[in-house]
Image (cartoon, rainbow, N blue to C red; front, side, top):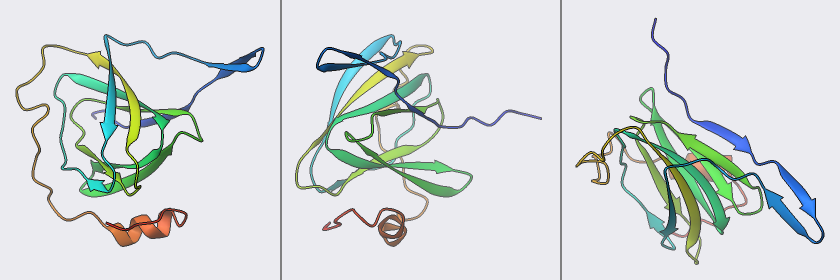
Length: 144
């Protein structure tokens, strides 16, 4: 029996310090600031030796995960600080339905040298189901 890799969604813990709220930092080998352009649908990509730990700091987007021959959709937003962890080998993508870019921090965990195909798009086996996204997240305004 083999263990299946799964994404994890974890709400960030925080403490109040005066007027400021301090959130738990994520351990990482490298931290990237990522901008997802407005009204965009990205291609799938997969990392071979990298775990992504994503936290939205401005705006929102829909994370698309391909597992078990089906897409999972997660709406991540600055209003609900949580980290999604995407292990190696899991194809994923981003959809930003908003008119403004989404900014997120990726606290990357490295498990080896970067693979040449890590940031190259891979072919979608079937189209994203935007109708399903509308049903799952009715508050989203989809104008793409």
